[in-house]
Image 1 (cartoon, rainbow, N blue to C red):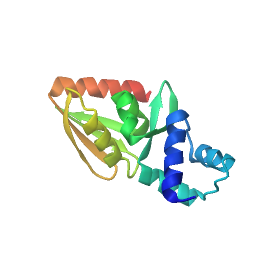
Image 2: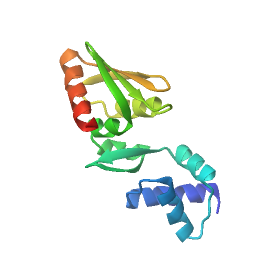
Image 3: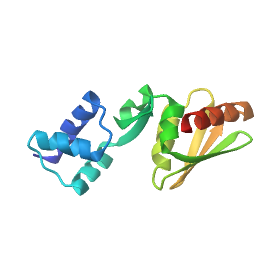
Image 4: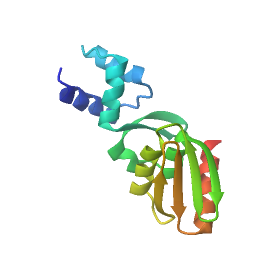
Length: 146
């Protein structure tokens, strides 16, 4: 099977099911007669633009294009290792490599509280409209992280 066809199939599976691990995806592919290594699958998921989301304490893969359907604080909380607030800004600490993914998500779904983001490898600066907005976002994130 060509890579483009495999990508289409993976996207279809992600839209139809809540798959939470690469092993789940690999098993679904294998059930359809498609054997891929973990390395190939990992590369496929990155190229497709999959990320994990958390909703109602359930963690599963979503397409980057579908993240607008997910609550911002809930999505962020799964990826966060820490949150700090300084006046009207939040500093979000993530796993290595996750900050830019989160920045894209926040920028696409920021609403009225957030003006924009700046991302490093594992740190995301979220610039909020004002101190009250930053405090509100911080509280939402901390609540979801518990």
